[in-house]
Image (tube, rainbow, N blue to C red):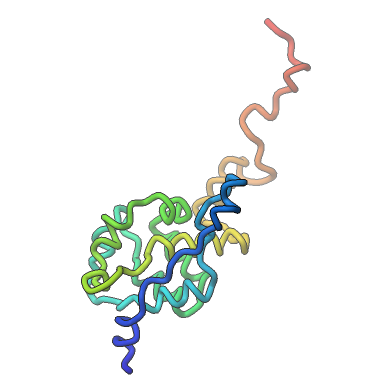
Length: 169
């Protein structure tokens, strides 16, 4: 069996969810996210098109085949850094972006079956990164600027006394 036949025959990896008995007693997200193995299996379904339509459907122009290839190779740190070059919020986009009408809606694999789970893979990389505590370079620069070029970040008004210490007008 050729590589293309393997990819073509494999269906979309379903996103695991909390059981109804469990989720009715908490306020956590219903989908629990891909494991590393699930993410790699889903990423291997990507055909790595030469002219990827999925990128044309992405409002922030994420290099979708590029980051998916890195996920398929288990290079998760490189994958999240690749996404960060154009998108600082992959965890949000992976959850709320309407992929079915944008990137996944234009996926070539979706013409004959289910499209590659681009949003699920984007969510996986962001969740994986959060678990490993890497930092988006744009976010690091922002905290550095807010902290005045060094030292600890202090929210606005932190240099003022406590409310009880202040005199009322």
